[in-house]
Length: 485
Image (cartoon, rainbow, N blue to C red; front, side, top):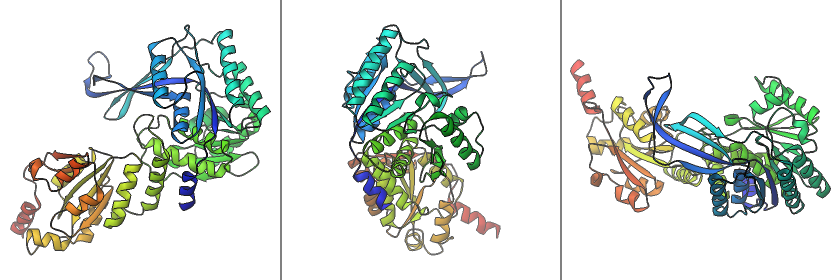
């Protein structure tokens, strides 16, 4: 991991011509309240506001810029409010929108995703499907050529929305060939021959299946499909993104190289392909070896799929993801490693939730608190009283189960991400070390009574009180067992 950390620290800052389909990604959250009486479809009670972000080529350019590159974005937009929104987002990201070609006869592409409890229920696209006029494409090709001539690498972001028409694509490839700079393609459709001469394409597995016209059921099928596409397309390399399985790199006449994903819970794949392609363009444009580019791109994909929406990317987030790799050996951790891991999660953009207790004879009430706590953030850390601490709090005869067994049981729960033992009477020092974003206790406490609550709110976090199951307690369970004996 040390060499990967050094790669992140010394990432190049090349100039990248990003040419392709500019989009606006819109997410509308809601609560699924019932099934419609009119048709077997869910009814969403929508939140009052939608969230919006750059999509497609614009998202790829923003990701490259966030990592320190100097992208120059070329694409098509309509003369509509969505185009104004795209320009505003570009301005906020420090990107020049001057090479966007406006076409009043077309609409800016918008992808609207409707979500309930973080899951997509529906996606609705608004786009122009008719080809742009010759005059519009001529302007686009001219802007693209100027961008390529002034760059160290080219990124083609193809969503089959019309920006990469044959004339535009031919102009870009010719200019890149003349300047002898790498071309990275985020591809679309079946015909990769249209990208002939490109250095590398970044399909996902489904896109590879489509281009090869063969199913990919296992590693052998993946290799065969990649070989078929490489042989027929004139593209030099393929980097196939595989979600939670990572990334595979293929070159003509050579065996594939596989880069597994680590420490990744796939939350949302939106925008991951843009990030992977952007990192490849940045790395190859900065003369890094393709294997190093693949490792960095894989890391970027991990960062994005662990976030909602198109996600954020930065050198700090990449460093945080590397720290997660280094800390990922098991759920039961000493305080020092837990502190390092919590910090790494925060650097990677994840919220850390903390709760604590003795958890002696785990029961349904404990499970409910843990499930409620995990729903409040991305990572749940459980502080567990040691045996000595439990005896001081509960008296002799407790705990029934030793600390090692209690920690192992908690670690086996899917909702628990990390278990940390503490020997003090209160978890305040552990809270101070972990710096959680959310501190959780049962609703039998008042917020003012929660140990460490003032610390958490002091650094901008919050205290959450979650409901308990009535009549569930370890003491009552022990009394029942004694009565039955």
